[in-house]
Length: 357
Ligand code: DAH
Image 1: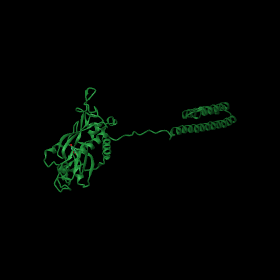
Image 2: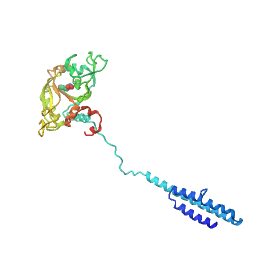
Image 3: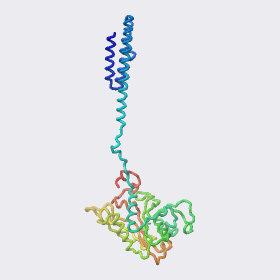
Image 4: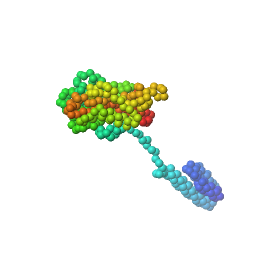
């Protein structure tokens, strides 16, 4: 029995030394120290020994058991520290590795156009002013030579703000409140500041009761106004030309076409040579898909009407000026040479569209 015990100790010790992970360790523990393990198997033999032999074998058995338990504890400690080491290695962070870059967005097409418009006009001394987007209809219409009930007002599909039909704080007159259907309300408001000469642009949101593939109920316009002692149509043409060449490209041409607006006299529609066919009207023999005969309509302009100057408190004998206005979204599309089937695409927030600009 003594030999068996020594043999068992040797085997157990090498089993624990060889254990590589917690599974090996548990298997060895069950095999040698378990209730039905090898040590327990040997113990019944004690019963058949003489008293002297029994004492010696019992003592040896205890020593063997202690040695095996010691080997178990040592192996357990070794395996735990290896596992902890491996975990620590996995958790280690290399601070020098490049991180995951967050995706960087960019400004919306309309915002880009607003920034460019502002910068281009600033070079000519036109400062961007802010005027209300909810205003008295006086500034949107009457002061612009469109008296109450004038049919020309129908061209601006206006949102009237319910209720207030109160007194205009500036004029004391009764009026309605509108969501500005165009940015031209800035004209008389700017004149009334009383600081001359005037060179301003007003870029704001406009609101009209229209929604379709070609119309947005909320969109942006730029309004420009210059007033001084001797401002002429030539100045208007020069300023527009400067803008058009800087915004659409140096080869773009400008055309003023006679038109009618209530607040300017004479009035014009502004056209630019097409950004796709360069004003040719056709590309390699086929009719241009974007323009009509080489020209694209940009917006309206004209010399400020004497009634408008008067509404602004200016003497038409002393002052003359020009005004212009157009839609920012349209301008952005024209620059890109884009003909959108549906203008609402611009505000659908579809990244596949937005990322292209
Ligand atoms: N306010 C006009 C519109 O919404 C555009 C316009 C035309 C503005 C002529 C002007 C101008 O300043 O002179 O259609």
